[in-house]
Every structure is written in C-alpha cells, then in structure tokens.
Length: 162
Image 1 (cartoon, rainbow, N blue to C red):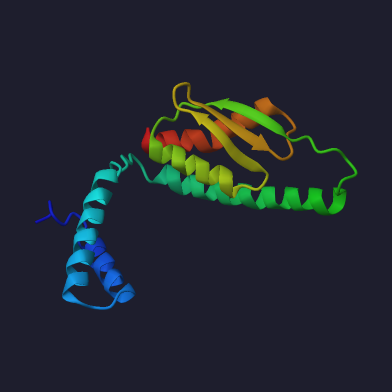
Image 2 (cartoon, rainbow, N blue to C red; image 1 turned 180 degrees about the vertical axis):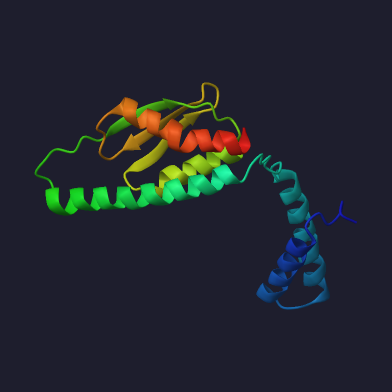
C-alpha cells in the first residue's frame, strides 16, 4: 500500500484541493485522484535521505551563537547606516572560505545562518573544492572572517553532522 501511496496525506490533500477548485463529479474525483497519486509518487522519488545527526548539543550551542551574532550584526549595520550614512566609504567585499563541511543538511544550515545574519550573503559554493564565497557588507579583515566562520559555525556543524 505504501508503494502506491508513499505520502497518503499529501495524496488526500491534493485530491481534496482538486475537488474544491473544480466542480465535484466522479470524473473530477478520478482525475484529481490520479494526479494526486502521481504527485505523491514523484515527491517520494525526490525526497532526500534523512539527515544523519550525531549530536544535538552542538546545534543548540550554534543556535545561541547565531542569535547573538544576528543581534550584533543588526546593531552594527543599523549603526553604520544611521550614524555614518554615506560619509565614510564602505569596505564591502567577497571572501572565499574553504570548508570541510560536505553534508548537504549541514551546508543548508550554514546557508541559513549566513542569510539570517545582516551584512552577509551566500554567493557561491563549489562542491568539488568545498569553497564558499560570501559577500560581506563591511569587511575589515578577510582572514579573521574566515577563522570566525570556521570556529563559530562550521566546527559546531561538523560536530553535529560530521
């Protein structure tokens, strides 16, 4: 039964949505059900492997570190924009960071951390070399930033998913 309906709630929800969008009839029930079954089967084939989490505590520590970093970064960017305005030239730039992370879930979490921190943007990641390229709004020292990313984020993600 799970071969035909790998996601029964998804299949049911899609069938009901189909019937709500069209007028109810036996033909629409059959057609909506067929489309929902095919969508459930397609979704089952696209499903990634479940993450292999080794430890939860590094993720809890990571959440605390990220929360503090987001607050600090918000404050720094707001202060720079409000008090400094455009009087002093901004030193934004790109930083290439070689990562040891290879787990897709850990990389996705790192992308979320970078996206949630104001002043940084994930630009590119090369899976062959493991090099991440970030854009930084206010770049003081590229080597210091590399070391901070590795120590504050990557080390905890490696501990959790390594």
